[in-house]
Length: 351
Image (cartoon, rainbow, N blue to C red):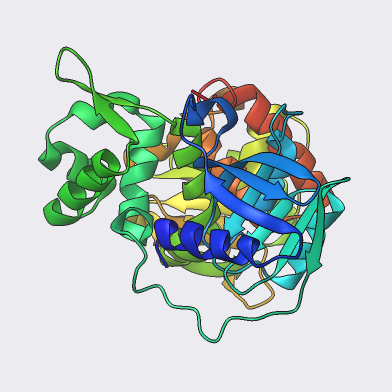
């Protein structure tokens, strides 16, 4: 379901709630980036009006939920999350953190004291469909988005340069750039150069789709590592691949430890050039396993590479952040917050 359809459907749902007289999108005097909003709604109830910034996320999952909770600020205007479907466990977390939401199935939590209270759960979609998912948030489009989000100057490079950096086809690159323009994420300045606007919003949409859309396509294999090597992954690889230092990047807990020095965790995520998979598996003595603690993922662009402590190659902080949120856990969330505040907050500020 497209975002415009989600917005329209959820507004109709709100209109059907008891005590709601009118719902309208407020456009006058609005700067959407100020609140990280896709739109603003004015809800007129029997007991007075409610104004809220709206964030549309098709199917919010745990990683984007954790991101919203960590980065949520006290706002003059409250925020309502609109979605195609909010899963029961996510709905519970949203309620616990007093984050308002409405989805297209009729699930909702709105709590504005003295104005409106709605708490509806348990309604499920008949069938989830991705046929209307835009090119930007399909796996190949997300590879391009990663390059553009982390290398902002890349947006003004020729299409053929962008496609090589992202490892995708010319047509998909051109389609994705057109979508960025059509959706208002980039604009042309007086020098006819493209510039980002609402960059944080775009990053959050990328993050919302990372675990379920892009990551599964990047996985090369899952393995177990010999316990004696688990604490020495970075040194082992640095020695074994001394002739190919750009063949891998450490992500997840190991990458976060090299960026923050705070927490390493049991899971090891390594982005690798597939041509070096054999050497990496041999160096770390990896054994294919379902009960895994090592995941090898495709290093789909050189732009993933980032320098961590002692010169070890680390994945870009955006990928380290996304991997930590995918793994979940209290320590991982704490570490993710550190990575975000140190490396991402100033890059992805609200416009």
